[in-house]
Length: 392
Ligand SMILES: Nc1ncnc2c1ncn2[C@@H]1O[C@H](COP(=O)(O)OP(=O)(O)OP(=O)(O)O)[C@@H](O)[C@H]1O
Ligand SMILES: [Mg+2]
Image (cartoon, rainbow, N blue to C red; front, side, top):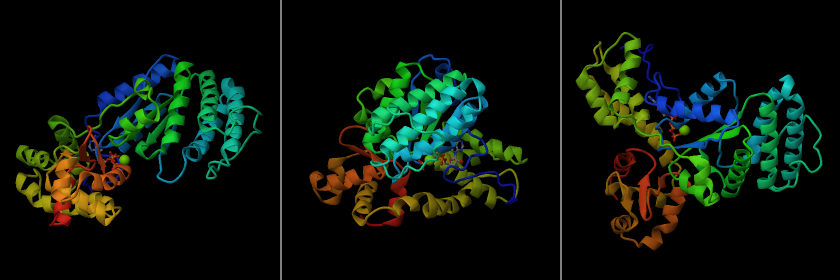
């Protein structure tokens, strides 16, 4: 059908035509932010989920929701290279400059900008990637000790005081949190903890792979008390159907019920795959309603495109040994799998394979749902590994 009006949008961070099934989480986050803004207690929410389930687009939507409610927001992605202070400082500066324009907050916003200047100066030696415009002179003794945890706490405190005087909150939206270095994650948790204790309106809404939960706990033992970890997962039947049917309907087209069933079977309700199947079924169909035959014919195109993009970008970052490990896992099916079983498939000992497994965890390719278990972070990756490497 008409290519121009094809509504589906597969792609990393590409907003879907219909953000299905995320209302409850949007509501939860809105309530938490509203409470924090009023100086009431609420846990920070760190959303965890596999690759392609829609964490990034949800985080973007949550940010829009927060801004519509009059909250100051900061949006960042934890990079694999840049340090957290380098990432945070310029963004905080912008938020503080905006607060500075509010009459009631300007004095405290300026003090917070002084704290930011001290923060950048104090940490410059340790994190030489910090680049931030300085609008005010540092105030000696304010967030300038050169110790990240302490200085970040003092800085957040000043930010919170400024936000409070403007009757707003500052909310940090942080994606790919599993890539934060442990000491920096610990400092962030400590600073948020300080704000929570003082009931200051600064909070975090984060997203990352499922290993985030364990990483937070390892960084600070009290993380469990400060954070909630809602899961962002595959869509259930009704939600997945909505994600497919509604965008088509808005363009005046329909899917037959068994076409929808076929898409749900093929995609298991994973958002990225739903977009891919929607797009290719639309493209291949000659007319509405799109039927099961169209979907079946579209499947090979959808799989080919996933193989070339979604799966491929992950695969290309792996060493040959890592690839072999994942191929061994794939042999056993979707998983999770016991380390011992993977070792048997590969004809090696668990011990010998431990470093490969660890490097795959750091790269975010696999995670450990429970002790000794290993699972893919990319849905349906087992099938891809078998296609790209036919032999173990
Ligand atoms: N709730 C939803 N309903 C329908 N489609 C969705 C939904 N959420 C996300 N998508 C689609 O899924 C795809 C992946 O979304 P996104 O990039 O946000 O996933 P992610 O979890 O951040 O993945 P990654 O871990 O790889 O960064 C996009 O094409 C997006 O349009
Ligand atoms: Mg993402």
